[in-house]
Amino acid sequence: MLSDIVLIGYSGHGLVVGETAIEAGMPLKFYAEKKPVENNLFELDYLGFEGDDNFEGWSKPLVYILGIGDNHIRNAVALRARQYNKLVVNVISLSANLSRHIDIGLGNFIAKNVVINTKAKLGDYCILNTGCIIEHECNLGNAVHVAPGAVIAGNVSIGDFSFVGANAVVKQGIKIGNNVTIGAGSVIIKDIPDNQTIVGNPGKAI
Image (cartoon, rainbow, N blue to C red; front, side, top):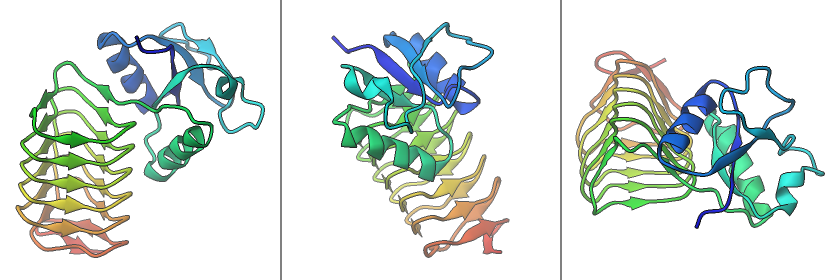
């Protein structure tokens, strides 16, 4: 049986993660934020701020989920939890359509109506947002965010900390580097090196 769960980040994206966890039957009991929230939508108990050295959650037998949208912050928080030997688990919507032949890391969020097809690989601490499609044999690194409605065609690789905007399309076989930002609605037909921002159809660096 899974231990009680702490949601790190209890606003915006974190509300979606929390609701998805509850719908999936996960025992969500606590939240961590810099201060108590005014609108405690899910009636969770406040544990404090995970960035504080005296955060009481680190001394309790708890499991963690990530409600942080920013790729770099989400990754840093997850690594801090690991320093305290805490498990950061996946949150997967009941409506997501996942092949039985995929490889998924830890601490990921897979939202409603996401599709992940055969032999795709997903690293740790990623966000696959509402209705995005990850086709066969794709390889996504750590702390990647694929926004709602984006389509990642087969055999695409996406590096760590990259962001693919809403309704963007990445054509088959493309290689996307680390820390790349792809704007909403962009169409990617060529490989993208590290640290680029790409927009448009076809996608161009800015």
